[in-house]
Image (cartoon, rainbow, N blue to C red):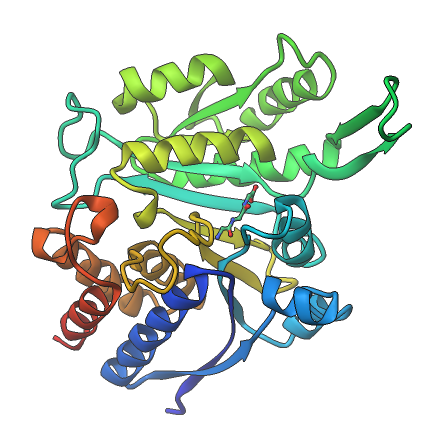
Length: 357
Ligand code: GGG
C-alpha cells in the first residue's frame, strides 16, 4: 500500500506563532515516522508582519489561491506591537479564512489532566465544551467606513452583515456537531434583545434548523448572561454557537476557564472541503514572551490533532492527544502560563517521546 502524503502549508506568522509552529512540525514528523502509513510534505511561508514591513504586503495578492494546492494549513499567530492590529488581522488571518470560506471556526475547550481551572467548583469533566464561531460574516464582514477625519462630526461605522445562507450553514454545522456529541446539547448565543435585526434572524433560523435535529436539545442565551452561565454553571453547557465577535470573546473566556489560553486550539473549517481548512492556536503572537523559549506549544499540538483528524488520520490524532494529556498531567512540564518553569523545548521533546511510545 502506498504512503499517504499530506501537503501542509506552514505559516508561523508573528511572534511566538513561529516558535509553536516549528515545534509542532517536529511533532508531526515524529508521528508520521512512528505510524509509517503517512508522511507530510511541508512548505513554509514567511507571510507575516515582518514581510509587510519589508514589502508592504503580509502575503502575496494571490496568497489564498496558492494555499488551495494544500491539504491543510497550519497557522501560528498574527499581530505585532508596532503595527495596528486591524492591519495585521485583515492582512493575514482574515485574508486566508474569508477567501477559502473557512466559515466554521471550531474551538474545543476542556480542562486537560493536571491543569487547574480557575473555577474551583469545577470537577473533572464538568467543563467540556465546543464553541462554534461563525467565521465568515457578521461583525467581521469588513463593511463600514470613516469620514470627516479629525472633525467634531467625525463618523466611523462597522456594519454587521448576517445572511440567511450564512446563518443557516453555521447553524446546521453546529446542530450536527452537537448531535455527534454524547450529550446532544446546543446553546445558541445572540444579543437579540438589543440587536433587533441580525440577531433576531439568528434566533429565527435556529428554531427552523432545530426541526431537522429533533434529538438535539437546544436553548438560547443572550451573550451577557452566557458569560455568567459559563462561570457559574459550566456543566450545563456542551456545544455553543455564536457570531464571529461573540464567539471570539466567549472562547477567550472559555480558554481562561480551562486553565490557560496557551492550551486552546482552533480549526477554521471549510466543512465541504472545497478549499483547505486552517488550524491554529487561539492565542496571538505574544511579543512579551517571544524569543524566550517559554511559549506553551500545547494549543498548537492540540490544533494539530484536529488537523490530523480532518486529514482522516484518526489513530495518529488520538496518539497525539493522549501524548498531550500525558504531558499536561506532569506539572514539571508546565510552561509559565500554567504556573510552571518548563520551556517550549522541554514540552516538545516530551510530546515527541510520548508519541514515539
Ligand atoms: N492564532 C490566532 C491569532 O493570531 N489571532 C490574532 C487575532 O488578533 N485574532 C482576533 C480574531 O481572530 O478575531
